[in-house]
Length: 393
Image 1 (cartoon, rainbow, N blue to C red):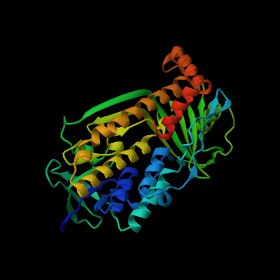
Image 2 (tube, rainbow, N blue to C red):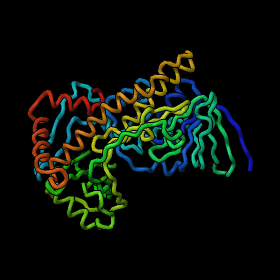
Image 3 (tube, rainbow, N blue to C red):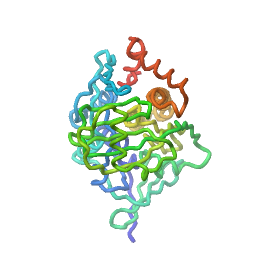
Image 4 (tube, rainbow, N blue to C red):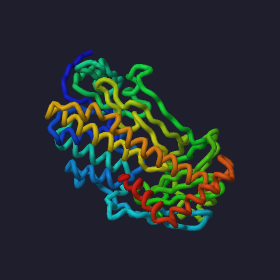
């Protein structure tokens, strides 16, 4: 078996949004990097994920000169569509003319980031198996992996960016006891369903005594549906007929097209933060460092923020020999992460407590209903909510 040794400035482990955005930022700054991805290109480009790019993230791509090349999708209307006990109540939030957000499915953004990175000469290696991180606290850490031919390759670098998610090798490579895990469990799960059913709106969310429900467009002919359910539920308890019946009950109206359901998954809702977001020369980005519940639509945007902060820090170090931004990477990101964890927790509790009282009681349900009405009645509450949704708080 052949063994190859290489050198670069940054090895990026993982080709999700954080890793690909970071790779493009570094490439545009003239800093060499290698992106390693365990899956195939076809798998990565087809992976279905949420797709709301907030104003801050859209402006970030503009500042890096990538807006026109990677951002597809429609402008994000400052409206959330709610069904409350079977009645439609659109909510228009204040943006102060900062409505640069986009509705862009994550797989479209990923595909565009891959195309731009490869077209500009970036080094992106799919099907990189058995990735190992070595000497992450030393002056020249190394990343060892097996390529698609079975050959073992070792890449030495100045920095490693761990962008491989909650279950990846990056965070697992940090010695035990060096990170603190902060977490919160919400007490319920979402049944997530991908179906061939076009949506009438980019999004629709229902508050109902039987629980939360959501429908979000995934292209012109498909939708992702979400149904709140107990933590001890199983996918087997949810045959297709029950899914459509429960969806119609919670929305209080028929589902227009009940197309083929291609996937069903149970996702316990939780918030997680690992601190610090770096160890030695390994820096954690995106889901490797933090997870927010999908209700907030902030997971992808927090990952992009990490990529922006880390790229700027690497550029400062390489071009000016100034390590200040790298040293501040973790506290800079964590301040932003905790601010949006607070928003995510509040909005998640609001939308679920206002519906099914069997989880947290009638008192919490009435509190949540009062808070929900405040969004409509108070300009101040509306404006604060808009700041969080646009990513500008």
